[in-house]
Length: 168
Image 1 (cartoon, rainbow, N blue to C red):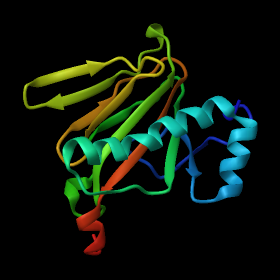
Image 2 (image 1 turned 90 degrees about the vertical axis):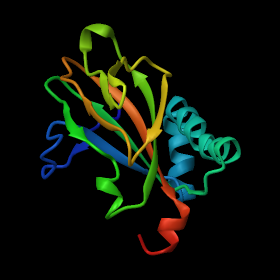
Image 3 (image 1 turned 45 degrees about the horizontal axis):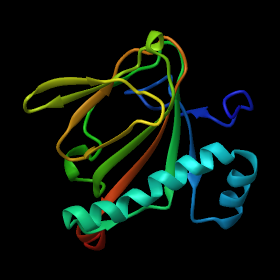
């Protein structure tokens, strides 16, 4: 629905991912959160699921994290892909530490798998609906393979609290 309404838009300057459409959900604004719950209750439930994860990571892994109040909803239409990259740009310009992806809608014929470049080799991850993928932003190079239809995901980048407090 958001795609049909034109609320997912392209970043015309993104050379790594020119066809992706996205919107940034500003979760610090109560009015936007209420609107999301009213207009898109299913999406709001997914956002809540992703927002609960950072505290679990802190508890389980002893990480010191800061959670930005923005989450990205991305759509990959036919022909879209994302070139191989790190989410932290080598940790030099932004303090991204953990990347969280929650896939929302996908069918195998669509393609658009997430390809992880791990020290143990390449691993392709099917973006199955409700699949949650978590990886270290500064360590795991990844890409999105060519999509032949619509593929949707929520992305939350969680920041390293220590680096963020040092001014990045």
